[in-house]
Picture 1 (tube, each protein chain N blue to C red):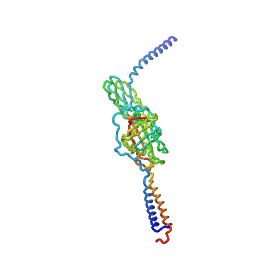
Picture 2 (tube, rainbow over the protein chains, first blue to last red):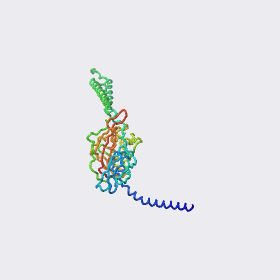
Picture 3 (cartoon, rainbow over the protein chains, first blue to last red):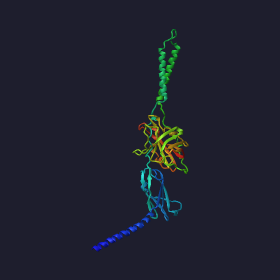
Picture 4 (cartoon, rainbow over the protein chains, first blue to last red):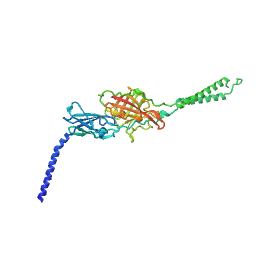
Length: 174
Length: 212
């Protein structure tokens, strides 16, 4: 009985070792399957033309940007950069004006089976125009002509008072 | 003692002054004291951002002062972000001589769009810091002094009036590969019911170099 459990334990240890070795060998292979992706500008902004570049590797015939994560079409075909055999693809899209600020991760699929995530950082922008000013210059009336007019009225009243109260000279005609 | 002629002359003078004063005061009290903010003509709105820019952008440095010789503006700037409702924060109306720089975006001279806001008018002063930006025309210069003591120069390439209800957010705020600048204030018709201007005047300018 004890022999049986020792054998079982040995099997488990061996299995774990084999699995570990397999994973360790597989990791570089997985890493090489992730295409190199660049986004420009980054950070971008809502309403901004943004370019996605992907290097899928040789023997790739097409690449597709999955745009749902950034509020665009589900599948956006990318175009060859330079020669068709380079394995490099590019597409420029305009981010929706309604996209939320923050980090978005749309996926890019290559025809050779590789895929990866683009990291798009979106900066906030003001939602609308600005509210600046209180309308003072468009509503407040009263030019300097008002003060000049009031001054003329005051001088006129004084002149009238003077005309009334000045005593007529003796012997002058009335 | 005054003779008849003097009294007659004073009476006529008095009547003339009072009548003229009443007419003048009446007209003056009905006219706007400053006039509505200047609005740009439609021809000033055009896309002048042609060609590719091959210059070297500036390092990030916060703006401290903006100077616009054509309209005699020389104003300190403050860094502000967004209000909770997503609109741009602007200086308080009690400080109408200040302009604000939108601090979530690039600084002037960096690639992208650096945005400044300023009041068009305020009760305390009448015309405020950006009252005359509708008078700017393509070719006019704008200078921004940065914290690193550099002075970034920009040349206006478009001035436009947009209705707030159809504000072209992407056109105004989106990233540009060329370092660009936007000056934004209110303009157009004033709605006395809502106490808001119905439009925004936007000045578009591009980086032409730095000194200092």
